[in-house]
Structures are given as C-alpha cells and as structure tokens.
Length: 331
Image 1 (cartoon, rainbow, N blue to C red):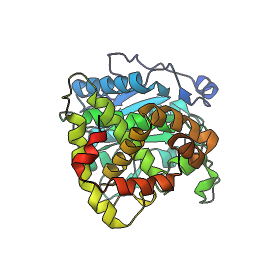
Image 2 (cartoon, rainbow, N blue to C red):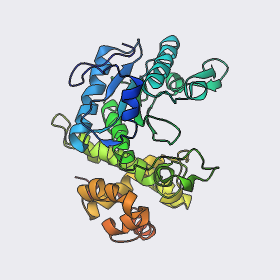
Image 3 (cartoon, rainbow, N blue to C red):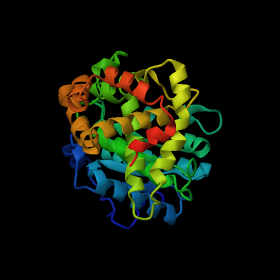
Image 4 (spheres, rainbow, N blue to C red):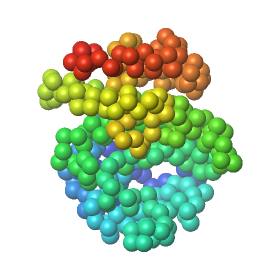
C-alpha cells in the first residue's frame, strides 16, 4: 500500500504541479482538505482503515487541520526503506525547495546507525509522533502524523487513543502560524513555534503532552463502545507517577521526557485538574487559540484565573491527597 490512500472517508490525493504547490505554500490551519495516507507495503489494509477511522473521529471532535499526512510504518526493514523513498518523492514533488541531501533519508541508519531517515527508528522503538514542518526554509508547510506497528500495535486498544493523542498535537500546533526561522543562531526564542511547543522548552511541554493525553483519553472514554469506568481506570493507573513526581522536587515546568517516572502521567493529571476548575472547552478552545496573540503566561492566567506557577503550587498540594479523592474529579 506504499503511497496509497485508505478508502473510507479519504479521497485519493491528486497529482499536483510545482506551480500549484507553491501557490498553496503559505496555507496552515483549518482546512476542508482530507489527509493523505501513506503506508508501508507490510501494513495491512485493516491497520490503514483503523488508523483512518480514528483520525476521522479526531477530526469530528476537534476540527480538520492541515495540511496533514498520515504515515504508517510496519515492521520490515526493506518495506520501511521503501517508505523512506516515498517520503522523499512526495516531499520533492510538493516542494521544489526541499533539501534532498539532509531532509530525505541519508547515510546508513538501519545498519551502522550513522545517518537518518524519517522512519527507521519505528521498526525497533515503535511508538507514534507528530512532526510539524512550518519553517521559513521550506516552501510547503505540513504536519506528518506517524503511526507504527508496536507500542502500541493496532491490535491493542491503546492504539486508538494514541491516534487521538497524536492528532491533538496537530490541533495544538496548527494554532500557531509563525514559522521557525532558519536563522536562529541557536536561539530558540527567535521562533514562536519553539517558544510555545518545543519539547526542550521548560515553560510549556507539560501542557503539550498532558493536554494531548488527557484530551485523547477523555474523548475516547465517551465513545459508545467504551466501558463507563475506563477514564477513572486510566487515571488511577497514571496516579502511580504522583509520589515520584512530588519526591523529585521538580516543577511541572521542568519535567522532561526522560524522567525516572512517566512524566506524561503526572502532566495528564494537571490538565485534568485545570479542566475540573474551569471546563474542557476553556482548555481546548479558549486557551489554545489565545496563546499566539496573548502569549503563554497571559493566556494561562486569563483562562485559569492565576499564573501557571501559582496553579502548579496549588496542584502540588491538591494532588498529594489519597487517589480515591483525586478520582472524584474524573468524569
């Protein structure tokens, strides 16, 4: 299925000339266009259909944003290398300014580990991700939502909320329209995109990941075939990160992706607390759509009634309670 599109609700992508692409190069945000789907040859049609189904659900929940491409990686090395080649073909067709030397697969990442490709790590590491390409040095802006065959695999229930989690990142990222500049000289503050969303910036990653995870689990829990106790069960499991977090002495602003505990889990609890004190719409719509105009700190205080630091301090006191009391705020 490499380069093909899934059927249900997605139309085949059209061949476009360079001129057409350049005319659309500044497009970023809400769209009527349907995502394009690319899958490795060893990915089954059932997996493609499942992924498409849950992206469609996410679009129905939160809106259609793009341009969006969905890339699905299997488990075979040769098939993934072919998907690398398809990536480069699609990129250069859409964007004559694309750097084939560095932004297409290069070197030997599969054997020696020297080099890079967009998909090689998913064979061994699994997982999922969204990469947003809104940069001044390219001529076509887009989001790439990548799903793999494990951690979780498509046969697992977790695969569905993971698709929702990744699509919520698309929603988050497309609420910013100022691209990253190639002339940053190492200063991440030059780019508004990096100021608000870069995982290395200690100010906001807790709302990036905590927001995506809570939204995914919350909206998944409301699906008619999901049992009524699902969200409380998930959040009870995530509560295992509370004591390690409190003992770490770190602020939520300082948590990275490689803590000794699962930082996503405590960050999800923080978002649950914010929503409990305001509303899901306040967090999802009001806050995220005001960040670019107001800045993070002002948008946070405007919507949640106090500074982020004060709210974190309040949360730290609240979350130290017994878990059965914490679960009372979970719908």
